[in-house]
Image 1: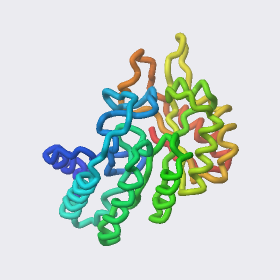
Image 2: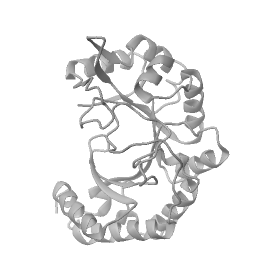
Image 3: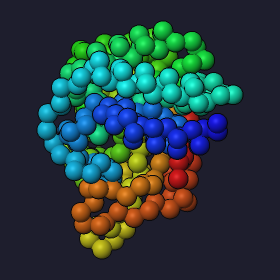
Length: 281
């Protein structure tokens, strides 16, 4: 079965199984079928990004995860995929297992525990009967904690990688886009820490919005380039993308589609830093 058809069939299967923690998604950045792990089915996150697509997003504590149920759902998912992806292998069909979901994965006290159980599960399977990658998609806000750093070392041991959110070139842009008062300088320190622990890509949403009657694009390119100077040698590259799905947080209707030529302009400027840049419309 072709990966796109496999995704459609898996989505139907997942709906019939009523999984709470595991979900399939067709990811443009991963390049195909991705299996998501959602540690926040209560729709809680410590940030409140303007472009977020999660309905009913709220700030609040991480829920208690039923980790045996999560692993059972993931086992069910992988076994179904193995039975239906022939003549391709599961590794050919599934680009990654990604910690993402409806809130920041690393705010869950059980993040490291679930990662360990995931690693154990994958090691019990044949190499061609595993997804191509394991990824953490994170806002990086918890990188100062020892348990999160330990988890990233484990992720690195299985050749996983981190996609680290950086949407701003200054403090005011972080507040406007991510709704956090975290200073950009501290955010960059955490990015540097992340790079020492695991292979790390920067992921940046280029956001076009109407502000005071004028169209603005965030992050501001000069400030963003300046911010990247301190980490350009450590990061694996930059995943640059526009907003493809409707935001559930844009209550004022200010978001606009980011033109392809704007994304390309950003990419060309960033490549002058000597970093790899991948663009996703």
